Image 1 (spheres, one colour):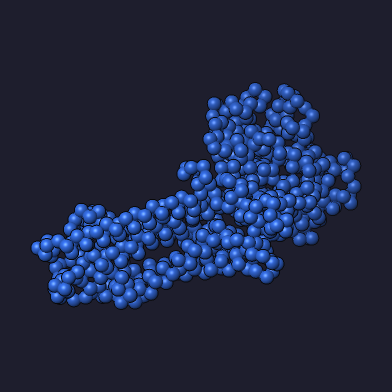
Image 2 (cartoon, chains in turn cyan, brown; image 1 turned 180 degrees about the vertical axis):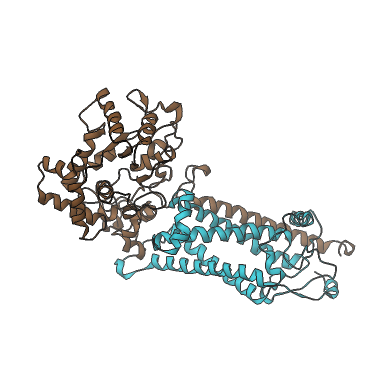
Length: 237
Length: 360
């Protein structure tokens, strides 16, 4: 904000995101990007390539990139869950929004008002702000879970009935949705939900970095949360 | 004592040589080794043929039409004779009350031992009045026959999933067999129609081994429905290469490239068309240049378009699919974000211009 505010920044920075969390964040972001792009081109392939079929493997490579990125996403997600147990208190937050905490919901409301330009100033958080946590938990975490399950169900169709992917995922998920086409459709729709999340996530992270009372983008690089004023924070944890 | 299959065949003038051919072809179709040929032959020679009641609900008889075109001539004679001896209203000689009496006779005589083959399905709305057999709703006939049977074969997509008469809005509430009969083993042989060789092989398997073939989660015999058309399609190399037919009359169509972009349902359809093929192995839809329409999959009539890769989502309008719905949502979010950026910039600019006392 102003130079005066900078002078007030006396509260010590807090180490919020440990290195494994930061690495996961960026690997996950890269995997999602690859998955969305290749996924789109699996649904709507590129124009036909000329020449002999034996000279090309374009669709094969696109699918390979999709499957490889899918594995990275899934394994990364498992690691992220593991780290929620062994990491610091902030590592757990993403999975456990305090949905029964009234004060937390008033924080959601306050942040919503902040985004509707109805309040002068956002609250101040060391961890995620409640509105961010709400969106991240329901759109990203559950979106990812959905994509991993439906993704492996579709992948299992290719690996065949004897494979663990088929046994664990395809065998019950495909009948649950009706048939393979329905799983494809839902897999596509939730991709767009995640794309919508990314648009908001990137915008909001940058906006918060500029306009809110704590650091945002740099925190996911260095791990340290810094503050623009020295008043007390509003975290529930 | 009921005749054996072999006796029926011989009576119909089929040579032993042809009979052995049938046994070996069937063993191959079932994925069994040569050692099983004599076993099949032995079963055919010694076991009394399985009585089968073949009922017809709401259907188009394409299953029967397919069945009587089984590639090796014996299959149709053998199996057909077996069926017609009991009850199949399309192909049996008896008619009217005489025909209906056969059902009762079979149920009494083979109580708990006959196979109930169902082609088509019962409609449940209007008290089942949309399908009347011998003056009574088909639903009554089905539940009565199912009560005393050993197992049920759901022939075709109608019996397995509902097919065209169950397509939205399904005014008669046509309902697949497994949603009406819950207490009997049901084997689904979906397809519109199913492949003839698949049908005869299923019956032969049940006779030979006196049990159901191994079924998948959805109750389909694994030996024929465990792989997608796409997995065994001869055009698959063009798919992997990224070579697609873009319109019906283009060069790629003439060259026989992959029909994925033309809406081929091969990648989502479990069936044996690309291996067994049709009409004595002559061809199958993709070989004829048209994509698979997914006729052996649940609800395929409502999973259109047959000519687009992405499935229509009618709830969002006639032309909507996942990408159109998703891209619209993303555009809305993107526009809202842009508007929000602008509003935020204005707010900041106003804050900077405002007197100092307004700020923290």
